[in-house]
Image (spheres, rainbow, N blue to C red):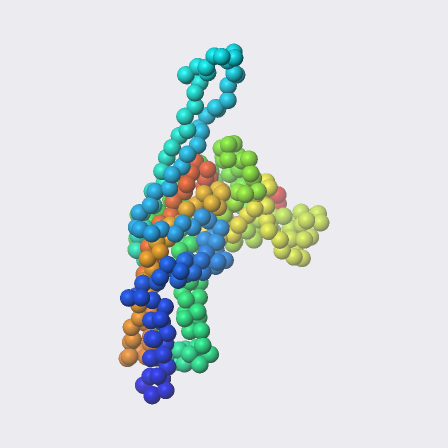
Length: 311
């Protein structure tokens, strides 16, 4: 290594070590990194992210499962004890699993960035950008029965959604029909704020749905060809998520999906002098759960690679 490169790598090592204390991000840095994850353009920026101070956490839920109002008895008479209401209480338990990223940064990249400054920001932004996409993959398609060791860590939202499943036969074309059935499958008590719901779909499904509207000989059909605007199905936005499988979709409220991220984020560095790389290792812990699984509809059997049906 030339003296110049050695100086650059030393500066890079020092700059990264300034981020941490014994490898661990302080609370402010950890919160900043979590915010950088959330700010990426994925499903993660809409769901509810809960910073956790320990590997386990319980979120309390309280509500009424049935009617609480009744005809009032005569003045001076107490309501019959059989008509009194008691809120139902439940807990959502989060238990994080550790994940790790190992990033190798060539010395020549360091040279460019050191001379321009802001190396820490550059590296942290790149790690956050890619980590956000990887976390989205785990959030959506995690499966403890998977042969993929990363996806095996946790069951994602597709695996956890079991109460309301609309299973279409194979080779169903993309139109408004599958989304109609998904909306009908959602319990009525969750339909009061329809605009806050989301159909999380794959980008291919989004394109094919837009094509089904473009085939209509109407001004809206023309707009789908000449421009682009978010798609809606029965008043609910269609939200493409990069890692959603083409055949599946999820209908729910974004904040009904809870991503727990532990604040104990570790960043450590090393050097691979033979490959002339600076190595950055990041470890963090997370979990994903529905707050109310009953407020979720899973749609399966979509076929964005088939012929589009005009809606």
